[in-house]
Image (spheres, rainbow, N blue to C red):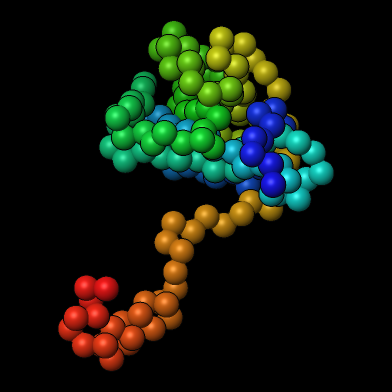
Length: 171
């Protein structure tokens, strides 16, 4: 078992980029904003060391307008999988504003998506706002299960507790 993963960013999963483009279009004419999360490439059956962006985390309470999006930073979790940010520019501009650059400090890559939100309507940038390359990879994105149980598990536990009487709830 490896204790440390490579922090080389290999690219973004096609499915994840699809999600970003669709979410940006659905949010239009307001800006869309989220945080990029990555998984180890080996977990995705790639025979390479590195990470692939597989998920977008949207923070509750994010506020957006046609000219900006803001996040309540205290709501952002301390996430070991975090690698950057993504937001849209409804005006179609694919370059970071001064306000964007001020938020680029955390993470390795920052994606800007512009209207009309097609496959050619996005660019990736580093922390300094320099355009960088981000490959789109055809990998199968793992399903994230926030709740790691099924309805059958719930029913079984309730049944066991019912058979154990009132005091079984205190175990």
